[in-house]
Length: 181
Image (cartoon, rainbow, N blue to C red; front, side, top):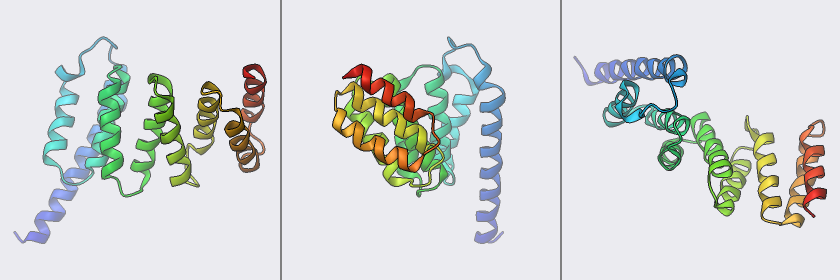
């Protein structure tokens, strides 16, 4: 067998593994009880094996692993997995998903609002047509409110209103701003 054929075969096998992982995550993992230790579950072992052996789609495997970890409240591990996924991604949808999840995880499960602000700002700057752009803007403005940086929030709100003129989140943020001041 020639080297080119081996590479194609490995890529096909890796794509099948990735598809299987997605299926397992969607149909088994997410329905498990939350007190389950993911390190003892077959899917986590499969993900770890995949991460160690696969050369293709490692970024996606890290993203899926982070989703599993976040589901089971292993926030530090999930953050690490998302950061690995983002570092390995080539600016594709996996990288976008990883950066989105980093910002959201830091917003909801971290006391470090500055780190959340940084991740949310990075997402908005890196993905001008991103799928979660409106939501990330919203969380960024809420971080500014939590940090009592109202001028920065007003500035972001102007850009947000121009980019998403029909968004109901604008009214919600304006109300929160009035209440926080």
